[in-house]
Every structure is written in structure tokens, then in C-alpha cells.
Length: 599
Image 1: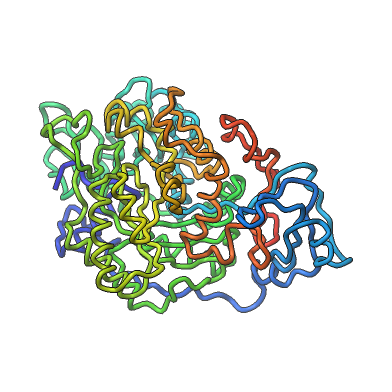
Image 2: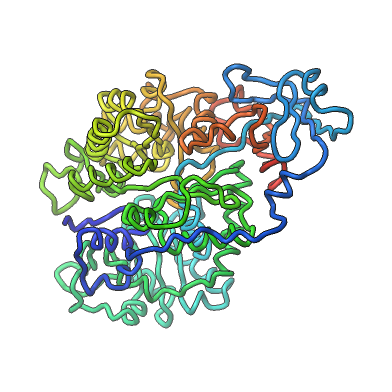
């Protein structure tokens, strides 16, 4: 096991889950190991009676939208003059004359006043439950996602958190999303920096990657972490140079030493936080969200939200790969809608991240991390046989399978597993998906097209870490083709775009802007040949995103019979200046005919 451990949402959980998968465990990870044990997937107990969705379905009358640009994302009729909505569904889309004939006389007319209407945006990979949890932490993200430019800003924000929470949550000061690569000081924070905020109460700050956390001296004492504490399996307690004394940084599996001691939010608090996240998503035009790598607590939260009728958005979960057998034994029906909540398939984790230099590549990193050999290429999370078995299990049960693959070697592993399973079970419409897909090669895209594998691109990497990828991670040639969307379109393949919240905010406008412009933080173009047009980018968060979820029959385009999941914007992204896409003004978001956001 490399000391750099596991990357992804919930690094300590990943480490513990893999321990369970391989039949190994250690006392040091005991707190997190429980997260990887059997999970009872109990179907949400939807109360009888009226729900948000039943009210939408039974809503009387017809609403007609007209007077603007209506981009349907339907290739047969890309533009409509008007649409009619009844009972949460679109009953007509086309010319004003045709729509008026279908709508009848008793209608409510909504004048778009020159604005643009599109299908509601689909978050096709993210972690909405983890995003909700971190809403209870202070935002320590760098600009523009947060207010941080330097270490003093972090300290100031933690003081603000203490003031607004009346002393912290359960006595802890909690922060998230700090990124040392973007601090003015260009270094990681340590216990010393956090001790300047407090030496009398515990502090924990999550790194933006969620695979590292930093605690202060008081927290180290509270957690019992000393110079004599060994590194847990799959993790590192970083030390001051030349000593065994902890410097406050807990890497990868070492997070398991802190997680059990963090204050636990109540179910009601988590539901309130989930409400806040849904409000934020709706303000970005999102009508369907995803919960990738769903853990036990995440499933319980989302099930409870469905039972309580608290899901204003649809949420599709993809439980973590260690729960394959749990799902097989459960009473939950795959792809069944439980009042806005459904399980779509399973999620594999096959490597780490390029920005943390843990992605599994076929060629060495441009600048190898300190302490590694010059041929260091990252590493796999599981071996080839294990990956093949997990894909085989999913294919045997008819389940959709996603795989986190940032590096091209990880993508090789997944594609090989898909090819092996396809030989065994035959070619069919399964829509397996490579998640993140940062370093896909041309030959891999050819294989994926033949096997029916979709790529889902974390395309905002070009902005958030593009300079880092070019200068240190991949070098100019490989960095210029991260998220090779143009190569995908040129093959006629379907693809999607995602933000991987809470790693970065789920603002779909940034996806459009990044896919079209591919500009870095330094405002330099990274891979001009992979730029795409705005309408192609829109497909990646509408129709093709719905297709990835097996929901293109009810979502993703404005067509008769589909759900009235809609977004209205002040400008038309199809014709506005490319550099302005990130400032697209969202004025209203509509879910099943009901307005869930209005500016």
C-alpha cells in the first residue's frame, strides 16, 4: 500500500471498506470499519396520502409557456415556440398554434418575456448527502468557490464559525474545502496554524479532496494521537521533520482516528442541511441530483427524506462497491422511484486523483512526489481480478456500474473488466460509465464506443487545477487532453459533464463555461482542440445526463410526455458570448411543473 492512500469522498471510509473487502482489518481503523459492514437496504416507507409528487401529478389546469426561446434539446425539433404543462408533465411542445390547440381554453399563460427555457439540469455525478453534511462546516474553499486566499483567511473564517455557532458544533470548530495548492503561502496548514485560532477547543479542517484533514493540538490530545501512535493501515499521521511528533495532518486512512470523535448531527439537523443543499442546487437549475458511492448513513438520510416528503429534487444513488451483496439481499428494487429517491446501480473506486498525484497512470507523473521513484505512476485501488469480479457481479444481476477512473491505467482496468463481462453476457444496453475520465486516450475511446461505455467528464478540472496539471501533474501534452470531450463528440459518442460536489460546487454554469472555454485560473487555454460548443455542452447536463441515468424517456429534453423539469434563464446560452456562460442568469427552476426556485 502506498503511503498516499485513497482519494475520494470519505477517504477513511474507503480504506475501511477495502479492509472489509479483503477480509483484513486493524484496530487503528476500527472506528471507520463499521461503515463498511453489512448495510440493510430497506425500502423507504412512503406514507400513504398526498405527497409533493402526487400533488404535481394531480394539479388541475394547464400552464402554457411562450414568448421566449425554448431550447428543447430534441434534435428533431431543437426550438419550440411554446409548451403546455399539465399534471407535472409536458402535454405539448411546438408552434403556438399547435400548443394552443392541445392546451384548450382554460389555461394559465406565462410570458417568458424573451428569456430562454431549457430542460432542467441533471447532476450526473456528485455526492449530495456528503455535500449536505459539509454544509455544517465553515466554507474554506479558495476563490471563487469560497473566500480563502491565505492562511490568515482560514483562521478568520474559523473564528466566524465559532461566533455563528455559539462555540462550534459539539464544541468543535469544523471547516472544509481548504486547498493548500491555492494558498498565497503555497504550503499545507498544520496544527500550529490552527492553534492560533484556539488551544482550548478541538479544530478539524478537511482538505478540498476530502482525503486529508488537519487538526489542532487540542484535538490531537483529545484523540490520543501522540508521537507513539503508529500510522494506521492505508494512512499517515504526518510528523514534524526529524521527529515522531504529529504536525496535525491526518492523511487518508488516518482520518479513521478522528471520525468517530466528531460531533454527529441529528437526523433532523441533517434533513435541514439537505434542504439547504437542494435550495442551492435548484438555484443552479438542477432538478435531478446524484449520490455517488452512497454509504450507510447517506442511504438512511436519503430514505428518510423520501419518507418525510423532503426531496424537492429527484436523487439517484449509486452505493459503494462493497455493498454489492447487501443490495442483492435487499428488498429495494433497482431503478424504482421511491418518492423521488431511487438506486441506479453501483459505484466502483479504481484509483485516486490527478491533483493529489494518486491517479493510476500508464506513464510517470511530470513531477514525481517527494519520496517516490522517478517512474511513479500512482497505483490501483483493487487488483484486476477484483475489478473484473465486481463488474461481472453487476452484469450478472443486470445492474448499471460506474467506476471512478481518473488515470488511464485505471480506465484500462475497467474497460478490460467490461470487455470480459461482455464476452460472457453479451452486448446489451447497460450504460456502464467511466466517472471523471480525466486522462482517457484515443484508443480507449474507441474501445468504449464498441462496448457501449459512457464517459462522464469532471471538466471543471481545466479551471480549478488546470495549471497544476500542466506544470506538475501531467505535463503540457497530457494535460491539454484532460476531459477529451471533443474527441468523444467526434466519434458520435454520448457523454456527460459533472462537478463532483462537494469537491467543487455543483454549479452547472461552470461546466458549460469550462467545456466551451477550457481556461485555467491563470486564464490560459488548456487544450484548445478539445473545446466544444455551448449546445453540445448543454447535452452533457440535460439529455445525455438523463440517458446516463436511464431516464431519457422521462427527462432531459422538452418533449410531449416527459416530466416538466425545466429551467428558465435570462440569456440564451446557445448564442451568448462564450466567456459569459459562467454568469448565465438562472431566473426560475421548475420540478414537475412546480417552481422550486425563483430569483
